[in-house]
Image (cartoon, rainbow, N blue to C red; front, side):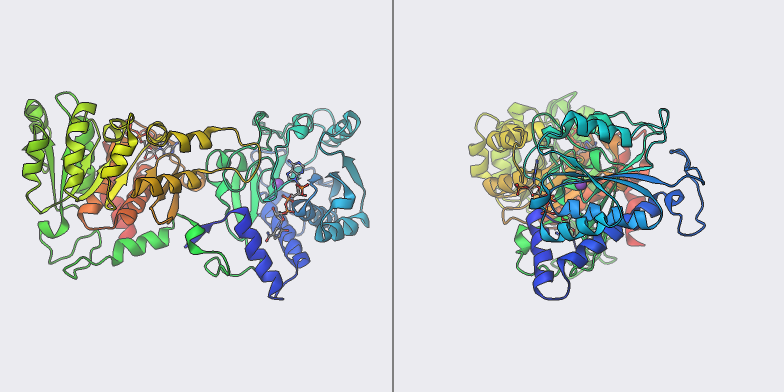
Length: 568
Ligand SMILES: NC(=O)C1=CN([C@@H]2O[C@H](COP(=O)(O)OP(=O)(O)OC[C@H]3O[C@@H](n4cnc5c(N)ncnc54)[C@H](OP(=O)(O)O)[C@@H]3O)[C@@H](O)[C@H]2O)[C@@H](O)CC1
Ligand SMILES: Nc1ncnc2c1ncn2[C@@H]1O[C@H](COP(=O)(O)OP(=O)(O)O)[C@@H](O)[C@H]1O
Ligand SMILES: [K+]
């Protein structure tokens, strides 16, 4: 299990460790600072002068062997700043020239940060940056220390230890200073500009939501972010990953992430965990006791792997449902039938082979074929058309089968979401993208859109949980930071950023395939939450397996390879 923590949860874990007497806050801070330095050397071995490490850097100017390496360390008024003082000291001890700035009042530094401030003072000085807005003179001093290589010798590293998990207000006052350093969000990516490293999280970013506090959008843009113990939600949600650069986690010897002390498991959000998903994929047991893994049980027949029914729209509108059907079949549903209006029968029949076809003109027709109890998973929405959705959705939901509602099946209820919520049951999965989410849950979407002026800000995890509670079923809220929640508060994030980035997944029809994947897993009797989580994970894996140039049709065709790799 990989938990994505909030700032409060991280503090609780730290507090529990300190209270247990196993470790002191000062020791944790020292380990944090050491971890940052190690991570910097790991990322840029040419900065590590301790041994004869290879001086290879394609992106940055190679440090001159004769000159000392130089760092500008920006420390803030809390313990994040304390970590900064530790890093400054460790670099200085290795011969670096380090210019340290403190943004805030010395008198208010928390005790551990104060100790590390004092320790640093034995090695160097600290320049002041007045809070909230540094003076012009202070900013020009900062600028002098951070001059570009073209004008004088610039620093090799800028360390952002201004704010970490304690950020609760916008940092608008720092705008001119960050602009001068060219490390703010507006800075161009400049390969000749020093490496920017953020301690824990880029300053300006809310650790709980991945949103920038304040309407000015002031934030540090880092090349490398070094966080502690576990990723925070802000590293993955919303715009977080755009500003973190590469994010690495340093173990500072806190208890294992699954040992959470007073934190309720219900309040946590999981990061998609490959290990857990592999377990789900391989260990599910169906009601006949056969292993329900995706290679299919050797003794199962097609009906033991479920029968999915996916409704299409009218002529010219059937492509989306066909994509979903292909996805459902490839992910292992025993049979997949497309429910087609008579006018589109010809169009669909010339395009499908393994997928079956059944005429379903209207609600009556749907009720009739749902008399077949073997149809155990339904999908409505992709290309369905709004009128057909309004006609068919009530009948489908009344049948109480596992049901995915996507696209038009969601939009059709924009005028009266409560009517939809009244019909939903616990075996449903809603798969809205941002626009559909806002139609069904306008007040929740509004909270997520409003500029956060204080932290911790309302997050996509909060929003999806709230939506799932209201709908009474699983909600999968799509995006590069897909969040999946059930009405009991269980929640996970399926992230497609950092090493799992798959921007080419944002292609027409990709969502239809996802709906099909979920439907196929529901047919295979996965629970709604497991079906949504597993499908979302496989969806990204398929996109990554294919790579750039992907179109939606390619996704189901990648599944055999991805499943083989999962099973191996
Ligand atoms: N937890 C752990 O296990 C470990 C944590 N560690 C480190 O501690 C960090 C968390 O430390 P933290 O709690 O002191 O928070 P931090 O981000 O330094 O700032 C808080 C201060 O900022 C202030 N403030 C806030 N917003 C502001 C604004 N816009 N403008 C101005 N001021 C603002 C706020 O002020 P106040 O509202 O109280 O006036 C408060 O004084 C964490 O990120 C990690 O680096 C590691 O050492 C090892 C183990
Ligand atoms: N930048 C991105 N990186 C990774 N996945 C993305 C990105 N943008 C969107 N997606 C995913 O692509 C799919 C798009 O679905 P959707 O918006 O319903 O499109 P469509 O209706 O065209 O199928 C969703 O699964 C979403 O999570
Ligand atoms: K920081």
